[in-house]
Length: 131
Image (cartoon, rainbow, N blue to C red; front, side):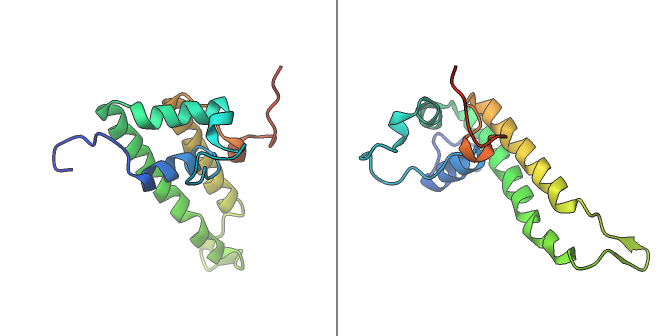
């Protein structure tokens, strides 16, 4: 990008944003009843992805970078699951949960920045009630 602001997201970046916000894959076709068009939050997210200002895209790209780093640190932490302590080193029993909580916290921040509710895979109870 060398000094210029990106003016739109790539398809891969959109996939990451949807995933990080907790929304499922939307597929390549607008057909079917499970498409984003049938859910207000999905439509809002898609509208925002296609209509952010260049500076907002830059901020969102920073979120993507941070989230990719946090997500990438979770799987390697499983290497320590078989060791509680070694010499002066003591394993953090909550390491994976701590990393997941930090990751999910940043995912929620991204949702807040984009002005969309956390998606189904990021909901606390796994269900959303409409009153």
